[in-house]
Amino acid sequence: MASIFTRIINGEIPCYKVAENEHCFAFLDINPLSKGHTLVVPKKEVDYLFDLDTGTYQQLTAFAQQVAKAIDQAVPCLRVGVAVIGLEVPHAHIHLIPLHSGTINFSDPKLKLEKEELAAIAEAIRAQVR
Image (cartoon, rainbow, N blue to C red; front, side):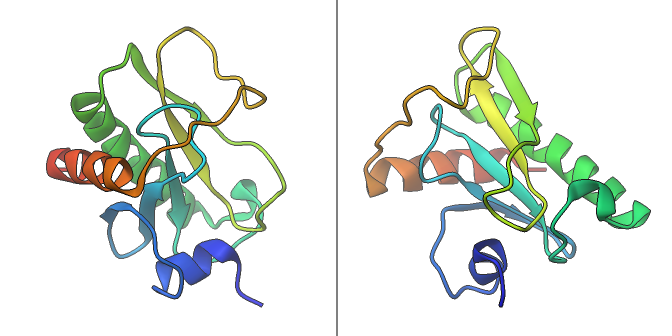
């Protein structure tokens, strides 16, 4: 069965897409730690980041860098943090999180954002992707 991320990539589940290329896809986390919290995934469904073939891994990290720079331009923050954690979705993914302090704490309360605000944030990031 396809992961939730594969279903998002395939358009079966709606998302707030911020960027896409031939190999990678980026969309807002709907339970963000901060405004602009984005997930970057390979289109190829592989459970564990380090099980990706070298080419896909390199494409994913380069794409994540491009998206992080766009987030940094679109969302007021000190910098964009990066994290690879969890086992909750069996599809490799990178969290890009706008930081307002020096740490990322996944046990912090998640933000509750309205659909309109998520759409506006996604558009602002999309506008900065190069």
